[in-house]
Amino acid sequence: MNMKRIIISVVIALVSLSNLRADDIPVMWAQLPEAAQAFINKYYQNEKVSFVTVDDDLIAPDYHVALVNGVMMQFSHKGKLEKIESKNASIPEGIIPIQIIQAVKGFYPDVNILGYEVDWNSHEVKLSNRLELKFNNKFKIKRLDD
Image 1 (cartoon, rainbow, N blue to C red):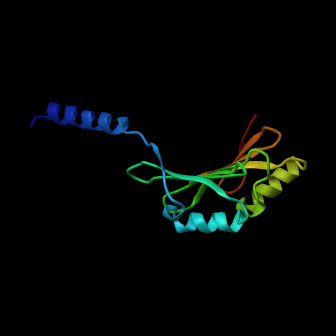
Image 2 (cartoon, rainbow, N blue to C red):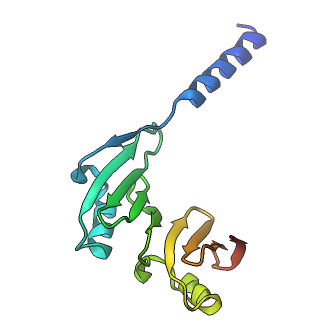
Image 3 (cartoon, rainbow, N blue to C red):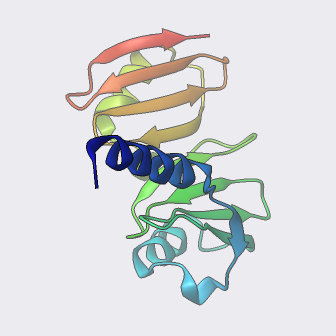
């Protein structure tokens, strides 16, 4: 096989893979990773689960959980919290690193944290005053969005 055919084959394969999309599929509570179940039982033990879905990602599917009270959560395939949002109630403080809570209270003492997102190199909080603060892994503010 010559080099031109190899390159064309690779390009076709990459385009085909990029056209695959993740769809959310409903799953039972028991199919949610144990770490995610433990998290919900710890912080939202008195709340009812509205639904649980998993995205149909071939590599590392994410799980989405909605509670009846309007809280939405996203967990990794291992059950690690990636994102949590609430429409009107503060996120429980035990979920968010204390350094972030202290920074938010220092700058904005009268606001609630309505959302929290964490990835491999940053943390982000959404505040009730409509601001979003992004922190690095050393909990220093990197960016403020409104």
